[in-house]
Amino acid sequence: MQKFVISAISEDCPSQADADKLKYLFDCYDSEFNHKFNAQRFPNEQERFANWLAGLPSAISLPCYYSDIIDLAKELQEVDEYDTKTEKRICENYFNFMAFHIIKINNNLNK
Image (cartoon, rainbow, N blue to C red):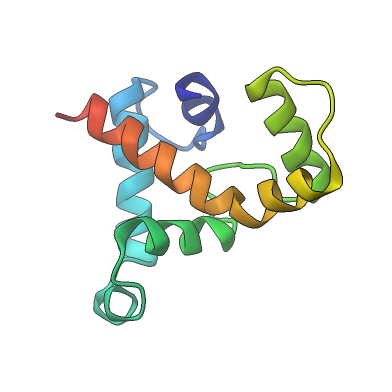
């Protein structure tokens, strides 16, 4: 997951080190979305970050179409097929799932 996330971060980042790319991503998030109004609207950091990701920021290139999201999930979980109910659940929780993992990776790299 870490390799996928790091590779999805914009090439505009001046450094290609993993920790620097994540810092660049979170700097963009802070300047674009993580302000007082949104902190009140979305008190949970993960939910706030997921909402920013759902706006398709240019700082990171994540799949956004259902078919691409399902293909990514199949690749990450190494499965061939999902039933319709599972596909729907994956798509509904996609940005929250990505937010969780990006925050976790950032916390691990920037201890």
